Image (spheres, rainbow, N blue to C red):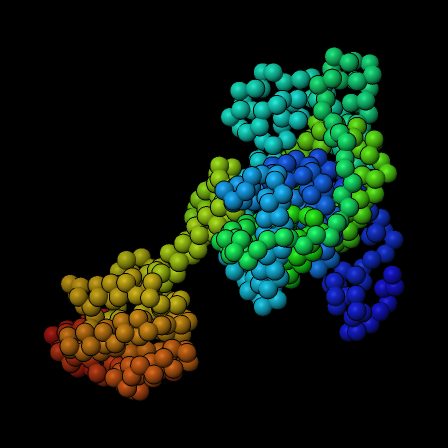
Length: 597
């Protein structure tokens, strides 16, 4: 494709699919074709297994990896996310539909198709109306924990085929480890050697495909020359053609009403997993994800999938990272994967049936290892303990609970940590550095205790952050402690420039503080409150009670206006003389205090 087009005049294809359309050339298409071939090979056993897990015929799993995969990529946001059948979505679908119908029955299949169609409709509407920003609450810490947990899950699910074991699940796998088979292990080792050697000496070659080919050759050789070892090597087996077949779900209106709660739950499952996976790959590729566009693409793929004999799809944990690692550059890799899967199942069914599951499992383990960013874990533990705990809990939840629950839990923990931090805005005591000839305005809390004295009557306090309902208890208690201490400074000047916003409970708190200080013989003042804060104060009447002469545009004019209002007797006995204005205040002849300048 030509690259000299005027960027200010995007083509119809670029407007429809995205700017990546302009980057298509021979090299890009070749890279996407090779990555798509790997994706097609990887999804073969997964689609069959996941459809069975969902209680559906294998061909529905394969159909989910064809048209829905291509549409989600073309109309989504991520360049590398591969959609299709997913273990988490399949498990969730089976769990929610099992009480309604017998798995595998015609009624069950109709319910699955109807759910797919309705989830697709809801996802599309969320994307169209720009409501996908809720996915922004999936924090980097939760995403990191999810990624680590997903990587370990990939290993747990891949090891049985890699070792020739029938057990699935961590506990069953540990119990069955002594019975591992040498044949599948040899195939996996050959696959890994092929991948790693290619990356070492021919980095531009498709290492994963070469490794898969070498593993398949190893399995074939063992079956021919070492039958005792070769018989333990499981293969993909016969693959039915995944032709998309038009089918509208045959359900009455009453039955559809029963699906409302299920549809909402599965929309959360599919959307959360897809967005989390898209962001996981984006962290490695450096791409920015448009959440609304991504959800629109996912919704469109499920809408079409629901009428073409597919079932609910989402971003695939097991194929998206291999797609990126295999060198995919644009969403065309997913399109090629869908087309090649369709062609391979028709033309090369006997060859595909010979691919050993141990070779596929070895590739998945290699991808999982690349996800375990131990250095980042160490950095997080050292720098931000709250985020480390969030990531750790999310990782554990990913291993022990369903993926969507883990993502939700991690997001709630991140939100809770954020709310805790914002509920305790910084309140810093300010003053002047009298040791410096220029007397700069400094934070006294950062100086040694007693090194920089304060005025005994006027407290200078800088507020930093939003003061909203959750922060009111902390701010109110702090102000009360300052006001009722052993040596209270009854006058308070609040540096409000960094007090970004307030709400009604916060405005009421400031009104209470004003009343309390005036009742005690002091007063309350503000320096440079922001316009939104002033607007709320006007609407609540607090500004009228405070008085316009208690709001100042700069610190020096504020101090110049406040100091004359301080108690004369206290000033006369004061030896600190903090402010330049103190020179004009009454002084007790028996006190020799001088202005600290």
